Image (tube, rainbow, N blue to C red; front, top):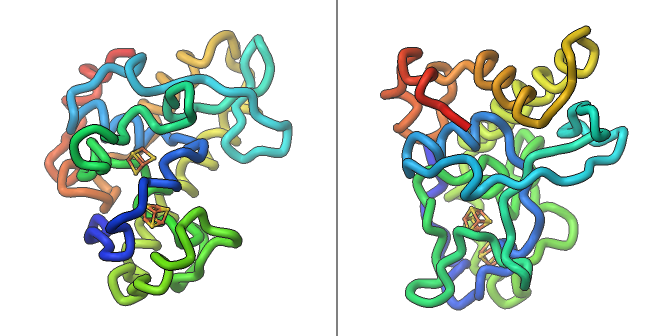
Length: 196
Ligand code: SF4
Ligand code: SF4
């Protein structure tokens, strides 16, 4: 149920791929499995505000997982040289699938001040972003927020971001996620291979 390539993106230098992208354990597992990329190649740990629903507690404060960005803020997966395309198109994070729509809206609703060039927005085809796809994106995000909440109120030792990631990998429900065919093929035995 991944978003079909939008005609509106043609000619845009990937402006949305210069924004910070928060990651869920679903996003991380999807890229690890589908793209065979280890976590350290694409995941960074960023500071999070105390009221950020992505923010999980660690010994060093409240953190969140984000996609690694280059010095000029481009996402590590934005292929500027060859194609101006996402190198992980079939396994990209839920917020990237939903963009430029709000991930929590029931129907396609544009996010405020989208990064898209105004000329490109004229070609936005709302029909291509089905409510079903948005619901799939929202489902993963809500699961993630629930896992963050459980972690933050638990009595567990909150040492390191890796501890939270391993906790999340145990909690996520890969088989129930509808985002990308990769998850329909994944079965629990894969989980021990999610090394970080
Ligand atoms: S993962 Fe792909 S779509 Fe998402 S920010 Fe990076 S290059 Fe853009
Ligand atoms: S900023 Fe808008 S037009 Fe440009 S790549 Fe992102 S979604 Fe497409």
